[in-house]
Length: 390
Image 1 (cartoon, rainbow, N blue to C red):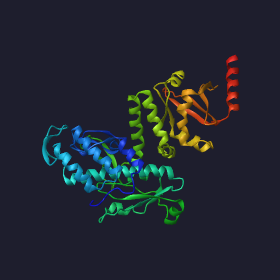
Image 2 (cartoon, one colour):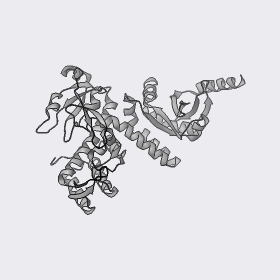
Image 3 (spheres, rainbow, N blue to C red):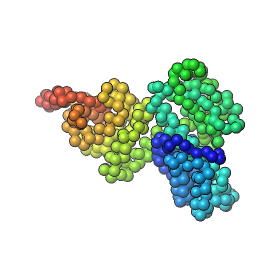
Image 4 (spheres, rainbow, N blue to C red):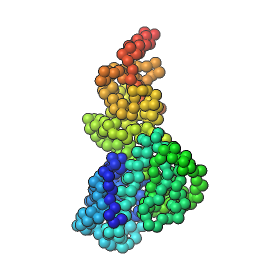
């Protein structure tokens, strides 16, 4: 690990992955399992919030500022020592009550903390970028990293070439174990054909029982338990869960800013390309929701709708959905024959319309969104007025 740093500038997706996490106290590394790591920052035996905060701040800086391990350890070790989180200490296991001589901070533990958090953040960021660029680079190729010794199971899958959305990457997207430096590289269809697209791998599974939680997971042979999930795929849910919590606690103006920040980023572009269906907050509009007898203050759009509308309408791309808030705040409401509510407004010289529909569970979602014309707006007005006369 000596000399290893995260150079080339901080990938915004990796930074966002870390920022989207909450905190979780845990005694054993198995207390936080699989995809849970994408939702919470945790370090085994870090049971005090000031210790977790110190570890979190140092890890965030490592990714944001490209801090190499030596500097990370030099700055963090004295802080942890001052907090009493260093060396060995007798602690009671909260799950069993057993008193153990627990290893807290040490140079080796700092290496593990640095490696695990920076590698997964970068892996999640790479996966998000791959979703945005898979039109041009639709395949991953599995490559060994710079380690001097490689696991036999990882050598066996070196050179595997499969589509980015193949299920194989759900479990074999690196890192695939403690200290694993394997990587994937996004490649063109031409390169994939030239190298040779791999047949669907035959995965040998084993059942692994987490002794802390009792949970039994199917883990592929050659992948360490706990590393058998894709941090990039889990990151999508992480960000949206965290954002929903922030919106719920925020005042309306601050909540609108949270949503606006999302649509000013490139994250929706990646979500639009994801095969997994998720709902993105697109506007804070309690009045519009109340008119549809919906629940909550937030209008959402599915990534499927985002992709379809961006592909269908020439003037619509994911960033265009940032206009929805203004449409709902000050646009003209025209009820449609199908029961949905359409909001019309001229923005920057062009007419835009967004239609909202309530789901069976009461959530209000975007049914359609596109650039239109004043003539079409007038036609919808006449249709509405005729419907009222009838």
